[in-house]
Structures are given as structure tokens and as C-alpha cells.
Length: 300
Image (tube, rainbow, N blue to C red):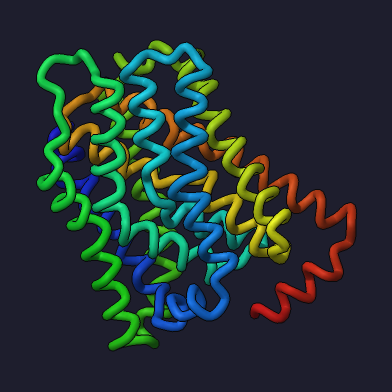
């Protein structure tokens, strides 16, 4: 059963998540990167540079084991997913920007994740026996569950726009629920790894997610972005697709110990994310954001 989940269900669910993201994309979303690049480029910089650097800072600061540190860095290299898109909608962010950033980072992940993680392992080797990241197979497998489904989803959106728009919301909810069930089932089959749930690993995960959420939000504000864009960048940087890290750890590297932090992250990241969204809603109520309401109405 465990092998079925790892080798079959996990890649299928990841591909389903990415298919739904692709079906929400259209050429205009990519043109906005060229026409209005500030929010998109800043989001990519935060996702691809700020988040991994933040993970490295936590690895240096906290007394994590080498395997847990590698797992935390692995999570920081993953793209967002349907969950970050849903949180952006709930937080009254810029949904189109959220999907665009998720789509672009998903397209880049098959190349950036293996290269950066391999570089990390060269500097911080893990003494866990025959532990090696096969670069080309990793790129191929990640492309199968990210690049190809996103591209296929975009083609479906282009060829059958009405059908894609009707199917996409349900597909997003279904894939998010399915990914959560996969994480829970893997946790259930790896309970022997969970003896340190109240530990420095939990602290590292919560610090990574919380600091990324607030850091992305505040940096976007300092850059002069609109409130809706600030919220989206905070959530895109603070909510990652843990399933990708789990896939690398279990299906590509066959290292259950490396999957501990990604598995814990898949559950724990929701705590800072929901808290962040609740804080934003309370902020709106207290300040009576007429300006934000106007932005939202303009974006509808």
C-alpha cells in the first residue's frame, strides 16, 4: 500500500494539481510579466532566491540534524500549488498573479530544484549510506509531474476555454483535498519518523513559513505594490507545495528520513497561513479598507 501511494498516487495527484494550475493560465498571464513586470519579477525573486536563503539562514541558526536541514532546504525549492492559490483567493489577493507565479515557478522547478539541491548536497553531504541525487532522472520525473501537466492544462484552456473554466474550480478543490489526504496517509505510514513532532524541526517549519509570509508581504509593500499584490506575494512565498519535496525524498531519492520535514510541513504550514489570512481579514475590518474594496472591484 505504501509503495502504491509513493510510486503511483503521489505523482498522479501532483500532476493533477499542476493540470489545474495550467488550466487557469492563459497567454495574457505571461504577457503581464512583460507589460507589468514589477509584481511578477519580485514574486519570482522572493520565491526563487529569498525563500531558499531564508531556509539556509534557519539551517545555520537552528540545531537541526543534517537530514532535517536538507529537508527544510528541499521544501524551500518547491513551487507553490493549488493551496497557495486558494489562500490568495480567501485573503482577497490577486488570484491571477498567484496562478501566474505558481505556473512560472512550476515550469522552472524541474531544472532549479535538482540543480540547487544537488549544490546543497555537495556543500553539506549527508552521511546516510548510498545517498545521491540522480540529476537527469530527477529532472525527467519532476518534468512529468510539473512541466508537462501545466503545459497540457494551458493547451486545454486554449482549445476548450468554456469547459476549462467550468472544470477548473472543482479540480482545484479536489486536488488540494487529495494532496492533503496523501500527506496524511504518508504520515500514517511513517509514524516512526514523527517522534520529534514537538521539536526543533517543528520550530524550523513554523519559522520558515511565518517569516516567508510576513517577509513577502512586507517586502512587496516596500516595493510599492498594491495591497492585493502584497497579500499574494506573501502567500506565494509562504505556502509551498510539500508534495513535490515528498516526491523527491521518497520516489527519487528513496530516503524516508529526508521526507520527515516535508511531511510535517504539509500539515504545519496551514497554521501560519490561516493565521496570516485571519490577520488580514481583521486588518480589513479595523481599517475599513475602502481602497482595497475598490481594487477588488476593479479586478473582478
